[in-house]
Amino acid sequence: MPNRLRFHRFLLIVAAALLLAAASTPVRQADPARYLNDIKALAAPEMEGRGAGSKGLTRAEHLIEKRYKELGLQPAGVNGYAQPFSVVTGARLKSDNHFVVQAGGSKNDLKIDQDFVPFSFSASGQVAAPLVFAGYGATADEFHYDDYADLDVKDKIVVVLRYEPSGFAEKSGNHGLTQHSQLITKAINARNHGAKAVVVLNGKLGDGEEDLLTRFGSVSGPENVGVVMVQVKNAVAESWFQSAGKSLADVQGQINSATKPASFALPDTLHLSLHIDIETTHATVNNVLAWLPGQTDEYVIIGAHYDHLGRGNFDSLAPSQIGQIHPGADDNASGTAGVLELARLLAPQRGQLKRSILFMDFAGEELGLLGSAAWVKDPTRPLAKAVAMLNMDMIGRIKDDKVYIGGVGTGSTLKSVLEQAQKETPFKIEYSAGGYSSSDHTSFVTKKIPVLFFFSGLHSDYHKPSDTWDKINAPSAARLLDLVGSVAVQLANATDAPAFQVVAEDKPPAGGGGGGYGPYFGSIPDFGETANGVKFADVKPSSPAAKAGLKAGDILIQFGDKPIKNLYDFTDALRRSKVGDVVEVKVLREGQPVTASVKLEQRK
Image 1: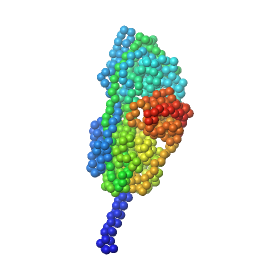
Image 2: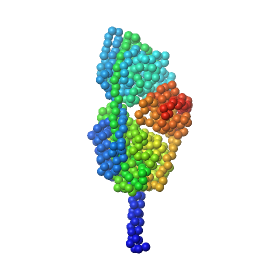
Image 3: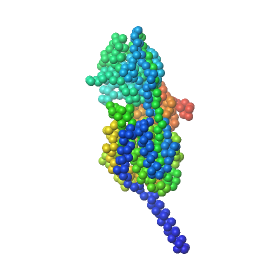
Image 4: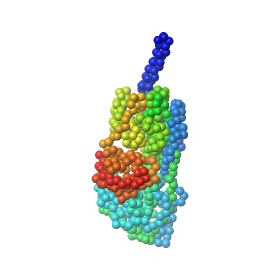
């Protein structure tokens, strides 16, 4: 072989070796200062808490997109980097809301926000009917208590007290309120008993407590619970009880002292007329998606949600501070800044990794994993080419080097990949095999894609205005990004992609229609829009639902004798059931009704 050809061959070998070395080189170290600066920017006051439909969320979207453009990453959305989808942001009161009380020959027009206020999940419409007092509006079989026993409320307006009988806490063995105190539970129970409307009273007040109306939109519920529901001040309702020769305080005291119902129909001379007009509000929000091309069209996903609570509303865990900006520095500016930092570190390896990288920033997570659900429903890259999804949610408050990593059992090679990364960047890791939890990776598990979920743990600032950037442990979070980056590179360059594995978890997830309460059913709800019923994104293996033959895609419309119109109905029905009950359920499967018998099991 001529010397010149030998030299050219030598150059080719050297070039190939350099490419191989570059492809196997771990990601460069994350920069704590740059990472923290991104968190500061995402949690700044002008971002308004990144609530759905806010200008602040749009500003955050533009910040993320600008960074991807600067890094030279390719757009991977529908409209450039963006993938739009619609979300429900709440509700608003329209102008035509009236409440008229007629007693004998007198007429009293109540003033909205002064005498009465509707709940945001109330049905809209007009109701004119007689009144029935139904105590606390509770049907609690476990306490042998039913405010509706021997009481005809069909097509009537039910007056109920807030909270629950004082004996419930003692009988339940805890010192907190039970689910029967929840306003949505009272609404569903009244509707299921045939009531047309519910009027809620505060009832007995504590020392120094004022008889205040609940702020519209501050209580969680579905878009429409199926019954008109309002709150009225005690002073307005006191005359209603007097017309029956009773007092509100005496009746409530009687119920509490005996833990026995004291329901009754109010006189026919008393008549209420309500006209409630509520509009559901929507917004278009965007996932932000960027593509780092590799040598094949297979890809690894690195993602986080960038939305938060805005100014709080019912999701806030600081109710007295609703209306203040909830900056969400840890939840989840920390994860979003992590995606941006890994994008910066990996961008120079364009075309060098065997597999591509898809960077994903989700909106709508706080509303129910809506962004990730929207993407897996209408993916912008073929789902079959996704080899793994790495999700970072609240990674900024690492303490004592302890990190939680979920989903380890969902992929055949994930544990070994993590162990290799641990050699380079050690942490005290608490592993969890299953991939279902309340963050965006769950949407990918339902599509049989292996996942890893990186999380630094809950803290007292969670979902509060006090979740601020100055509490972020940037040096430790940057070290975790080094670990996540190492995992991503290993998965991108591995000869074989991890095979998806079904994990039979020891602990059923909070959700599946149960929200962590009552017996175990085993479905994973699809939080996307379903006009009527609860759609299953997945059904857990070996769960009661799976044993009964229920499948992903089924829409639950009946649970025993109770209609199911939304997840709140399902949760309420499941909580009212017992372990060992065999419940006849009805689902729609490809538009056709299917019935099944589900034997409910004990949560482990």
